[in-house]
Length: 148
Image (cartoon, rainbow, N blue to C red):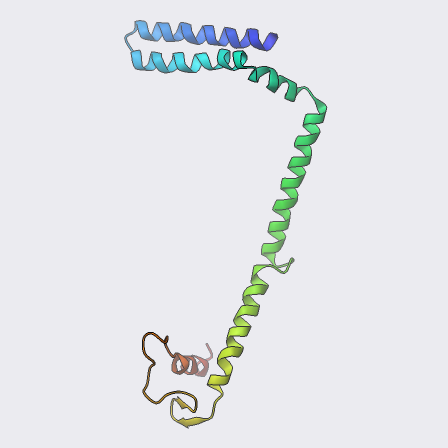
């Protein structure tokens, strides 16, 4: 009851300010003020204000908000722990994938050499065709030589 009276008073005051603004021939601003001032009384008439006051004054609703806040806090903490590496997250998966890739490339690099820069399993025509991908074993050997 009190909230509907307050909303009606706010709407009436807003409409009064809109009328004064229109009197000064600022019609666009007056229209905006009138639109904003009709919102509180519209909320009262639709019943949203009653619903909101029921939410605000019930302890069980506040307990529900507390549980939701706790849930959000736990989610944020778990994400932070995962990023620090304590939870075995992305970093460990990336390290495992990088190790698997190194192991896959290791047999080609450790093949017996037929000469400078050529391995036994590699074709002698130089670089592969563009559809087959690029061969970077020479570059890898140079980088390993320099400790990179």
